[in-house]
Length: 488
Figure 1 (spheres, rainbow, N blue to C red):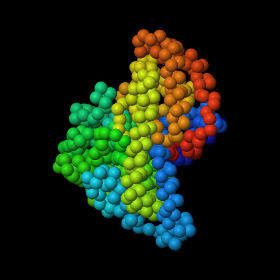
Figure 2 (figure 1 turned 90 degrees about the vertical axis):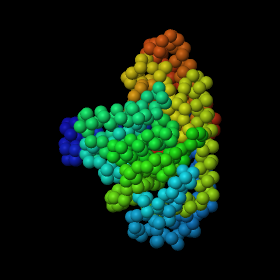
Figure 3 (figure 1 turned 90 degrees about the horizontal axis):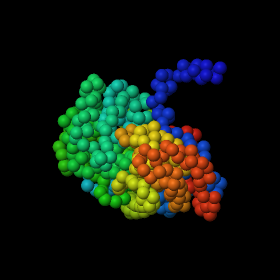
Figure 4 (figure 1 turned 30 degrees about the horizontal axis):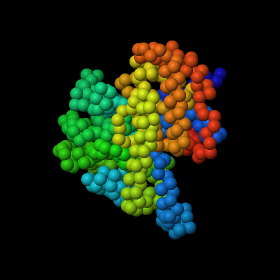
């Protein structure tokens, strides 16, 4: 009866609303659900799941809070800013407040080392980078058309670009043998495969700095990509939402710098996606930016932006903050220092027990190599290991399978959404896991390292978490009606 009622309700909805395009049936989102049902707290739930699947930047909130307290006039919801209330609250031009677009353009220049200029009139607002991506997909592709995208890539792209547009994402397969770098050969192979399948390729989706790798693309690779899309006459959508999270060399190079200084191309094919969710840690503000060098795309996207505008209250506050250039300099430099320290703490701690990571210089995460812990080199074995990590070790790390990685055994680990004590707890759990795993298996071939000890590992981690944590602040986490709402 229950099944019949559910089926009847689904038939009342559209096919698009009830299809699987949202991607909820994925281990990436399953990890979020496991955390949401059993969140770690140092005193109330010390054996809970630690959230390491959330790419959120919480390392500079103390500076943000200090600025807000020192600049109460920036908000219309304070006594100091109330005189602007009506001006901001009434209908505004959906192009966005001029001061907001000017401030965002200036911040984008600052983040890119003032090596490029951005025209505020080309900035289109969106409800986060998610909305910007979908808007571009609507503008550039018809249903069944495709964008090429290097693997591994952010799982949310499947939802953001495909669910309501009907377009496809086709993988450019990258491998660990060259640190997952995009090559001319891999781009050509993916394009030819699409041609053979009679799939029309309309674009190339690029994420730089990379999520999940934490790497930045070098100048030569960026030139190769621009040359490739120009030769094929396809669009390039460059997601640069992590551009201010670079914490060590090599530095970030924007695609805008490449087309301004390094290579001639048809600029109508170049489009950027940006937001303040990662660089400043404001995902809740839903500040997404679409920047296109194509006049027709800017015009079309601006018409569509009425479906997902940034509130004028948010624009007003953000414009005031971004216009404080001394503060922005401080935020960018401090964030870089703190990300470097946290990344180093985590990766050095993993190295102590022989766990390697891909060398990276950006992002709020790193790409962890657990291939040697797999029962066998398959994605089934990866999922077995992931379930142990989620349910017994109680860490929500994201498996490479959900990022369309071509090789099993890689996991994304986020490190900037928690306090220092939570980091130490997570490292102790990982250390104990590796030590127990080492004792429970024979030190012979990789095939024997996990499978025979699955039950023993499970029993060993029933009471894994530390019983006495001391008095520390709660590890930050945000309650969600659905883990898909804030997944990044």
